[in-house]
Length: 168
Image (tube, rainbow, N blue to C red; front, side, top):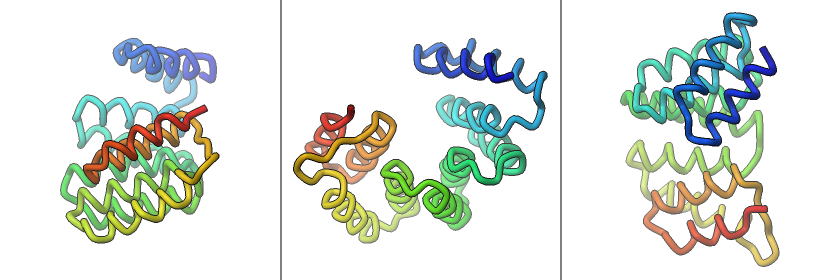
């Protein structure tokens, strides 16, 4: 199951979502309660804009691995798209408690934006700038990509590019 999951992640990185999904499903055949794989299927469903399916995979991922921040993050994004802003915010907050990393804070900003809380999103954007775009700061690729998405959501292209340029 681990090898199939790893190959599926490689296919995700290569942009071949169909092969990734096939490997993830094979991994689940070998290990049905594999939370990491369920979260990856939720993320694929999100990318395909199948929000009900993403939420279902997110629910299964959280049940299988209640300490996996990625599972909560996928479910938060799906719930937001399904109009469940309060539940989306709760999931984003849980993801941030489980993994206090830049990407989870960027997720909270995106959820605030999606829920129409522009003032809170802007305040969070300012805090993220002070913390993660300070001189000399570097970011992991996942963190940089999520921060860039958050800044783009705020309409701040310059900071979005700045976040990407700090990825290592």
